[in-house]
Each structure stands twice: as structure tokens, then as C-alpha cells.
Amino acid sequence: MRRRLGLLLIVVGVAAVVILPLVLQRTEAPPPPADAPPTGGAVTALALVGGGPAIGNASGDVAVIGGARWFAHPEPVRALTAVDGDLLTAGGEGTVARWSLAGEQRWRRRLESERLNDGRPLGDDAVVAGVKGTVARLGAAGAVWRDPAAHRGPAFALAVSPDGRVVASGGADGRIVLRDAADGASRGEVEAHAGWVLALAWDAAGIVSGGADGAVKRWAADLAPGPVLVAAGPAVIDVAAADGRVLFATDDGAVHLDARALAPPGERHLGVALAGERAFAGGVDGAVTIWDVRTGARIDRVRSERGGPDVPDPARPHPGAGSRP
Image (tube, rainbow, N blue to C red; front, top):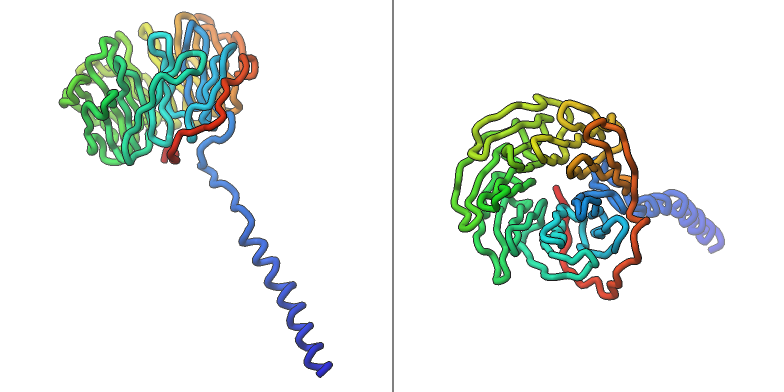
């Protein structure tokens, strides 16, 4: 009996030594993949209000530098745009919302059954781009128009013409597609990039596109080809255009204003903006860098911590989950 008990204890001991570490190893959280989206306070969207920056981050928060901060989305803020003294946000979980600069929500609308990659104001409505390829205009009563097959693969980027009459979208199929803002009718399309179209902007000089192929291109308002500003390079993360100038950030961390490098490769910048004689870029460290457009000199580097108190948000009621693919 004692011999059997001894053998049993030996077997149990060996099992504990061999099996327990394997169990513990399996219960540990795996490390995030190398291409995982940014988390925490990384600036994922940037807009300008009153000449200064407002940011959206990977935690779903929005902050006006020197002003209020508030929780906007349960997933990263994919787009942030100033509109008539307010801010429009698009969240990865599939909603767009309009806010006062004090963080008061005006309205919230959802693209049903689809996460969002972009959202832009269109009057008191919003046009959105979804991960399944949908482009839609969302009004107070629902979708004003919706094209669920606007792109073959995700729709990544949007731009609205300065007069608000035409919407441009770019997607994983490499196309830029134009639509009538009122009814969604096709206005033309072009095979723009050898790969994903990741960023769009539209100023008085026309459309600017940036792609995963590293190219930055100008297009006329009817998509007639214009100058190729950059033929190839690291993937273009975001573009901004104003007064004929083009600001863009690439996946290697560099920021360029036309042909001039403002920031060398290094820390990633995920959002850019132009206003007057200032260029802005938001980084994964949560800071916004500001440059003088004329000289290329860095003027300042600011963070939302300089802002005012958080807007109370006891419930955080917004449903949904998702992230840009």
C-alpha cells in the first residue's frame, strides 16, 4: 500500500512539473502582432478649430488642445473634422457623431452592420466609408443613400468637394470613385493606385490621393490626371491640402510638405492638417507637432494634457466594437 502511494505521489509530482508550466503558458495573453493598430493615447485623427489642433485618439477620446476632453467612441477615432464650430467624429465601431467644442453631443448615427474607416460632414449629415466597401450618406432619418459595393474590399478614405456637391472615396481596389452628394449617383472613377487608396483630400486645386504604393497624386475635380508629387515610397497614411500645398505622412514616420521633409523617418504620424502658415501632425506618442510652412522650422509640440478638465461621462453608453483592418 505504501509503495502504491509513493508511486502515485511521484506520478502527481512529475505531472505538476511537466503539465503546470504548459497550462500557465497557454493562459498567458499572447503578445500583440507587429502590425497591431496603435493603442492608448496615439493620435489617430487631427482637425483644426480656431487655428489650433483638436485630436482623436486610439482610446476613442477627443481633445481640443487648450480646451475640453471627452470620450467619443468605444473604438479608435478614425476621422475628425471641424464643421461650423463643431467637430464630427467617426469611430471604428460604426458610428459618426457631431459635438460642440465643449464635448456636448449633438447627434449620433450608425452605419448598420459595418465598422467605419472614415467619416466626413456633409451639411448636417455625414458621409461614411465602411470596412466592407460601403459608402453612404447618413441623415437624421437613416441612410439618404448607400452603396454597399462602392469598393471591392474596404473603403478607406473620403473627401468632399469644397462646394459640398461631390464625394470622393478611395478603397482597397485602388480606385477613386466620385458620387453626387445629393443622391449618390456615379460621377466617374479612376484606377488611381497600385494598391490601397489610404488617404484623400480636396482643395480648390482638386483632389489629392495617397496610397499604399507610396505615391501621392493630384487629380482634377473630374479625375483627369494631374502632377504625380511622389511616384513611390513608404505607404501614405494621411494627406491634407490647402492653397495648392500638400502635406502628407508616410508609414516610416516621415512628414512632407510638398517636396520638403518636415520630419524624418522615425516615430509614426497618423494624422496631418494644414491651416494658413502652419502645418500639423499627430504622433503615436499623443503629441501634435507644429511647423512653419514658409521655413519648415518646428514651432511647437503640444499635448492634450494642456487642455481643460474632462467632460463628465459616467455611462459611456456607446455600443459596438471594431477596428480598421
